[in-house]
Amino acid sequence: MNDALPRDFIRQIIHSDLETGKHTAIVTRFPPEPNGYLHIGHVMSICLNFGVAEETGGRTFLRFDDTNPGKEREEYVEAIERDVRWLGFDWDERLTHTSDYFDALYDYAEQLTRNGLAYVDSLSADEIRAHRGTLTEAGKNSPYRDRPVEDNLDLFRRMRAGEFADGEHVLRAKIDMASPNINLRDPALYRIRHVAHQHTGDKWCIYPMYDFAHTMSDALEQITHSLCTLEFEDHRPLYDWLLDQLKPEHRPRQIEFSRLNLAYAITSKRKLNALVDDGVVSGWDDPRMPTIAGLRRRGYPASALREFVKRGGVTKKDKLIEMAVLENCIREELDFSAPRRMAVLQPLKVVLTNYPQGQVEMMPSSNHPNRPEFGTREVPFSGELFIEQDDFMEDAPKKFFRLKPDGEVRLRNGYIIRCDEVIKNKAGEVVELRCSYDPDTRSGTGTSDRKVKGTIHWVSAAHALPAEVRLYDRLFTVPDPNAAEDFMAVLNPDSLATARVMLEPSLAELGVGEAVQFERLGYFCVDSVDHSAKAPAFNRIVTLRDSWAKVEQQAIAQRG
Ligand code: ATP
Ligand code: MG
Image 1 (tube, rainbow, N blue to C red):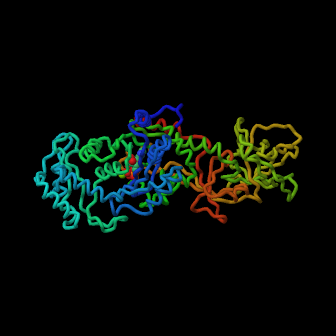
Image 2: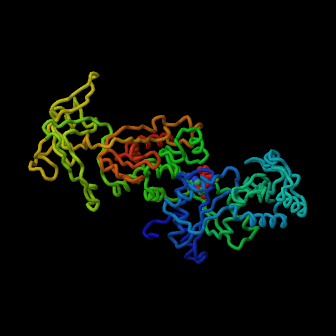
Image 3: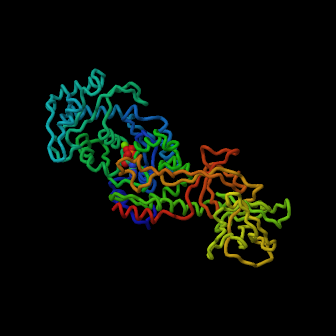
């Protein structure tokens, strides 16, 4: 760990535990439930759990929390492993499942029962709910609460043996129905569910509840610091109660931090699942999704995501981070790492009337303005080019320094050209420009030192590679769709636009996932799903400049 950096409160605790000798090695875990793909919020948890272990020479478990048979799928398990690895982390042999511990968890539950700290309740789910009380009102004891230990043990064993139907009995901890903390009002430890499990098959028909399974799995894996999000703060007394009663050899400590929420994005697997199921997006890896799979396909580098969560920090305060912060991390990384190329998004044809018929010149072009080690490439130049429609204006204001009638502009890595004639179609739209070039102004080797104010990009028409480009925008129209009553009602109908574009020919060689800057336009990458040599498809990762920061700040300020 870089000692010059200020430490967040979790790293302070961890370092102090190492200094005082409370622990000699840090052990953490990332415990996703495989019921969906991981999202940007999980990136924070992954970077924190794997990060603190890595920084201190400790270790981290990737533990699948698979206590909900039926909801969990192998597709999700594979996606989660792929995503954690892609982010740059490794669990070595420490890939586990809560289900790996079902035997040990059952033994712990029997131990509680033997010690009079757990009982089998035979109330229905509705009755249990009615007995629970409210935030202001104490709960009521179940009539089964004082069952003798022998009866409890017998019933619990028969629950396990499959003698009862779902919901007939539950095993509950015997704590305090009058506790101001509802989590301590005799929480359920085991429920009956006659459902096959993806790992344990038909071996079990009772499954442990989350709090119990999670606490004791932490203890079994000898986790030192169990880092979780703030909503589990009220569960900590139960976590500690279980450890106090069961006294496992290793006692983990739970520490809570605030969730990472990203403006204009949803960070709930359930809601993301709804977007997929309803066909609002093309899948979990749709490049507009805040899933790791979506962000990767969009072209966001893993290093930029790690940097993003680092900047967000680890705190106890709820926060909604602006999209601009994430996009700036992406830009900074890509500005450094992405080679430059030329592409025209809205082509307008330019014919150079004085350029020798059939001539093609190869123009050496730098691949990165600040990184000479990226080298140069040769871009073909000819008498018929495409420029950006926006780079020409017929009735241009004085300060317009791109191309206008009788005006001059420099073609990047090319020549200075003058617009002599504007050709229009019947509808009065500009369809072609007739221009002349000044042969003495070739970039780099020209003899003229003439300067013009504007420089624009271009692509040679005969050599251009036609492609589809997808331009992405926010998926939602409000900064906090998580808080919206109906998140489906605040979808941005313009979150995806496609364009037929013209690329410089070298872009045919770009590999899947590789990012480039289309000069003056933004960062783009080859799409990993729809792209082929015959039908190239590129995704816009991010624009060059942030056009959103202000709007977003205002929106967030108004929201208060
Ligand atoms: P979701 O609501 O999306 O299902 P979850 O918390 O139920 O989220 P899990 O698979 O249980 O999803 O999460 C695995 C780990 O990731 C947990 O430790 C959880 O606290 C953490 N985590 C989930 N969402 C966020 C978030 N937005 N910010 C930080 N950590 C998160
Ligand atoms: Mg969960």
